[in-house]
Length: 343
Ligand SMILES: Nc1ncnc2c1ncn2[C@@H]1O[C@H](COP(=O)(O)OP(=O)(O)OP(=O)(O)O)[C@@H](O)[C@H]1O
Ligand SMILES: [Mg+2]
Image 1 (cartoon, helix red, strand yellow):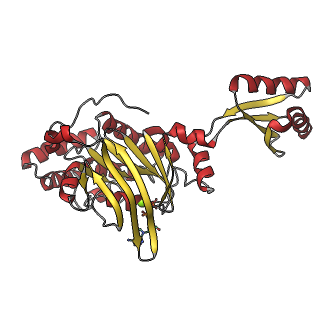
Image 2 (image 1 turned 45 degrees about the vertical axis):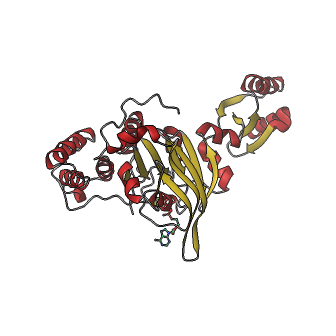
Image 3 (image 1 turned 30 degrees about the vertical axis):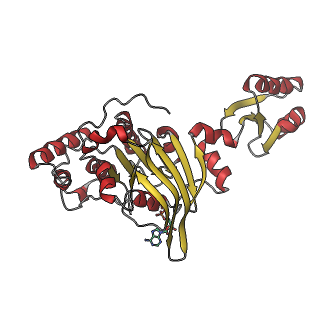
């Protein structure tokens, strides 16, 4: 998805003055490596995020997503490679990097014992806002993130969805131009996930550069301009959702018949265009190169043999298919699995 021009740029921050000299990429990592003892967690990660776009880092549990995000946001030292954020080297200029980023997710800085409002004002003061502007910004964010009613309650009493919204609000106190979102929707119910997507889309509309990690193909597909798929500490694919899908190939036609006899007859009528059959469900899968001609030809072949169809569906490759074909593994957990919580 390409986004329109920035609606509102980050004119109020200290980064405004250096806008003209910014490099093309807001985030750039080259040959990034990291080991914990003998465990090579990152084996040469390369990624670039263009300013004002979202990159999704997609991968299963243990792929190295959090490790990458923590390195990119100056929280974790690394072994090899280079990382720049807005042109600042994370190794030698960590303070400059911290000034332009917000970080939220699995390692977020919410204090459980403080109320939502206190968390926000405290973080505002850490960012050196005056007491009055920290207070005003906290109120603004509570309203924007639908947390006004819960504002005076300790964060530990918040539901998962409220907690994620507070996490994100805290990281936005100073409206940073770059934000890292580490699995912002893992463990949320579908309604909270969609609410979170709306918030993220608003950030995108404001021109924020976002690096989001996710295990959910659908999330990357919905939100991101580009996707980098990582597995076992390596980049195994990258591109737009469309490009990745086209790598897995062709559309398929799923045909359902009324009996085993009909399925067998169809198999004969369609010959080698059939790539898969399922005797239990009386279904056959046909690969189609061209939706305009191949569907027609398939139906004509069935009609010639008087085979009756029960149903027919065109299946376009999904990112799940991409993941499966790239890693040879089943895809990660479904979004409504509640198994994983913030670490
Ligand atoms: N502090 C640490 N010490 C040793 N090993 C670690 C440490 N942190 C992470 N690892 C290992 O590094 C690998 C990558 O972990 P990481 O947390 O980056 O994965 P992830 O992609 O974020 O996974 P998840 O989806 O579960 O959050 C895993 O094998 C993990 O066990
Ligand atoms: Mg992680």
